[in-house]
Length: 239
Image 1 (cartoon, one colour):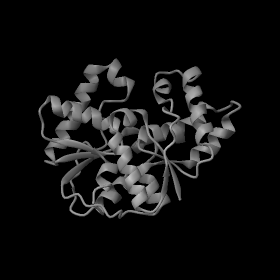
Image 2 (cartoon, one colour; image 1 turned 180 degrees about the vertical axis):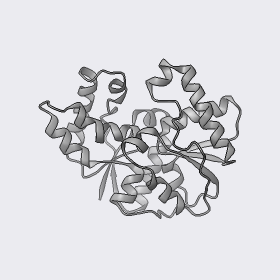
Image 3 (tube, rainbow, N blue to C red; image 1 turned 60 degrees about the horizontal axis):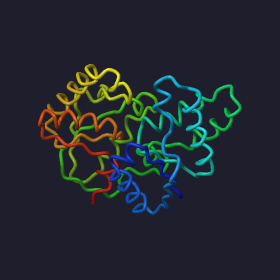
């Protein structure tokens, strides 16, 4: 099928290798991948800061109109996926664009959920002989209920050992603008997350959200800890 890949702005600017890995994986599985040049943002930063009018709706409307004809819209982020799938219908409720939002939302898939639930794939032929632990991003876990798909995929990666950390479902403290508004709280939350990950003695922390991984890697680097972070797509692209 034709996969329309929505690349979140922070992936595009800071972690392009994540998008490249996803494209390589889908092509390896025999699918055509389309990566639109726009839209660049789903509107979540404005939404999270309370601006549900103006900028947020403008960005959301641009995204829906641009991607409306897509067969399937796959997003490399649980947070952006939740914005489009869960919050667009809420954002446009009782407006003239409500029908468009409700038509659009079912086409949106978070990356791991798309592989498992839409394509019916758990073994993508990946090989990654390392110990990893998994971080559940808040939006992917709580809004999209996406607990099992990434683990089902990791379980079929040759050579990979998944060691669950005690604080797998605990927020990393990033939260987009939350980390800027409340840096002390954000750092304290990241310390809890990193300590839990280090207890597993895993070599890598894997997640479906590069924004969470940026938070975790940032603190780990400041503490001079050896653990590294990878997006799930980067692991699954390994052969």
